[in-house]
Image 1 (cartoon, rainbow, N blue to C red):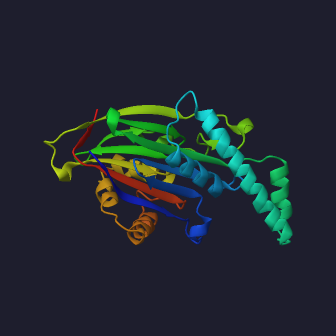
Image 2: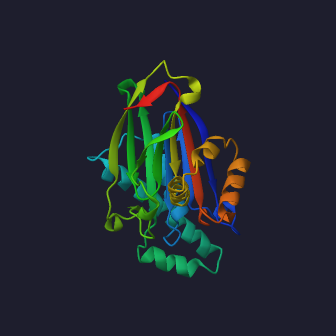
Image 3: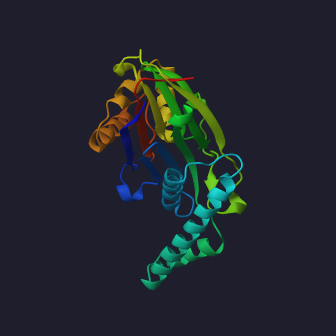
Length: 261
């Protein structure tokens, strides 16, 4: 078995630009991750990127060591944010006082997170997940399972998160182990797919399914950033279901000749 990257795309809210996007995603070897920084928090895009990058480089986290793993990322975030605020001050940027006050008061960045680590030697997928960014597993073109949410009405404005200060880290990730077995009888066009999506797209997926709309077919056909942006733009103008105007990210991985157990 092997993992084939299909999509790893992010896009911003309407009337914003790519640099305003608070989401981040990455695929690296047998690992991938996605994060959605909370817009109202302090330097959330930096926090989301640090979470994803560190997971892809050090994916072996579990119930026992995740706080130690997170503590190193928190230290990196604080060092980088301190440098950014100093640069604003040195340039006499108008926002530097506000940012200095937020830094002094130890205001955190927060983000949802999903990380996947494929351990084919053990026939396992290890998952770390917190918040309302979701994992969808498709087999033979049909949804087999979703994590951690299952319905559109489970989304809210106050999802669980990982925080950039230990004092604000009120939630712990869920850790899952999903078995993956090779099935040479499965034809290549019936492969196993893993889809990661941040909250707006995840809610849209559930809304579509609840109206018996096959949303996955369109998602699996996306093969470029331009196609992803077009899909998001079209979905935001639909009446029902409508994709919320929020930062939106998608990761799609294909596992040939695999079945989830």
